[in-house]
Image (cartoon, rainbow over the protein chains, first blue to last red):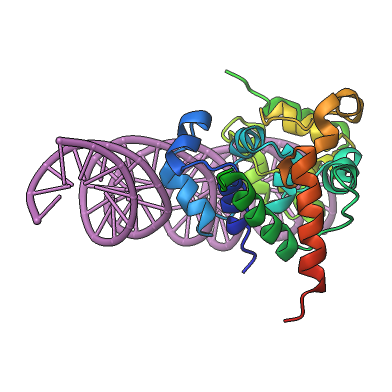
Length: 113
Length: 113
DNA sequence: TATCTTTGCTCGACATATTTAGCAACGCTT
DNA sequence: AAGCGTTGCTAAATATGTCGAGCAAAGATA
């Protein structure tokens, strides 16, 4: 049950975007996005991953790795380890911690000041 | 009409391999390899491209680019991009968000279930 | 309350990826 | 010449990617 769907959903919600907004920005249909986020898609095309990476401000390589595609060796370290260390020396995150942080990020960005 | 099929065929022939040899080494069926080399395949999976890259001694990125997939930024380019330090699996973070996430991460890890 | 809009989702259709089985041409051996 | 394995290829089948249309629930507006 490798369910990376919740990861994509968390990324989208962290930016407070609706499925249809993502569709407008990327050209990927909201129907497909929904399936992606609910685990009904196994290997989204690299092109679509690239579009989503741009919109969600994560690296293309990160998404490639998430869905199980091989990632070029030269960029693997940069894609998976360095950015984490770079933004706060948080160290390695488990998938669960990652989801929880994304959810909390959504809360942070949503709360009224 | 982008016909990269002949490119794959040239790679194979440069190593004097038959379709069935490549099948044995990579696990990709000779039938599919034939279709790939005769332009009947449009977007082979990254996984298969990776296997072929290894066998043919070319880089994965090269094959990705050949078939029209977005190619990950090279290490040098990434290193020179200023905002990269703030981009990780969680997307772009402000300094405030980073601090707050760090604090929340500590909470997550100290919490007993 | 009644109506309009938004949101996430499913269904059915079609495109592409990939496999298994098999065919025709070629070369090699007897 | 007859048989045998090899080679590249195609046909049919199945799996997955992706989209357009549309539906039900929730929200906003009158």
